[in-house]
Length: 392
Image (cartoon, rainbow, N blue to C red):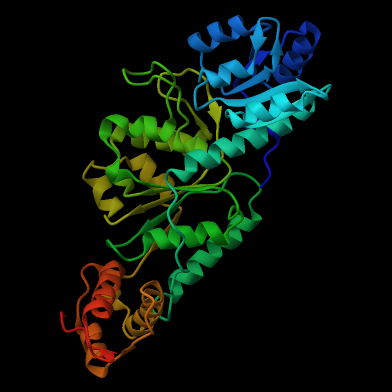
């Protein structure tokens, strides 16, 4: 889904460093019409002062200024990593733009240019910033989810969700994925994202149980400079990083009730505020949530917010544990063995009859994750031509 520039850029803080007063006025007017907050200066020293006092989402930086080169700000590291810098340079001075890009600018404009180009350039820069932030939580791709005959109902449910997504014109509803540890909830979340209309957009994955309580809000929603003791620069949150794409919150009940309330607000209003900030930031994120616990029971016990539970309970899917998948275990094992043997650069091994019996009779408390580890252990340590899984 392509989001119009004014929707993704509304409310952003912009710094314009340009000594030509008329051009600065034109750029300011264009950006303010799109709902952005603009601060301008015509000197290098003025820019230094503003950057030291305020946080900006974007900076439009002229290369040549009356009291020095704008690239000095980049060389000095004056801008927060959260600020996307676009340099402006006159025709024939492209070398200055190249220098700025080498120092960390994300794009450049050659003067004279049409102010209408700005939203397009800023959206391009913002996607670059999102990609950088999302990369911190990106995991290696893995093969598609194996449904088999035992998970046909689950596959049908997911296909209906995808069909509903394709019909939607606005934000997509959240999806709740429930299942025991190791059943493949993360793989299903990746599959649902990749198969859906946002497959080419960012997928950001977060294990909520691994977020320190005192940093969880900042990680999810971002923070402004000075919001707390160590907040030396502003930082984009993961909801912003996933804008236009998907945010997967694994083990969602691990979040505190106050953070659960903030997640609910994002789902309903599609807006966030960074920690320590007053600015409202629009965000369009498809939320996928997963848990190995019974949310209905947690809600009844007061351990999970009832309003958030009911908001998540629209598209609810449950993943059957491995012990209840019957003969599908053997097909899944064969697929995993082929992949593991490729990783170890070994010829693919077959499963002996005794090995098949062991796989089918074991309870698999760790589900698919445990199965994968057991298969890899056998590939590495067993000397037989066929796998028998002696450790089971």
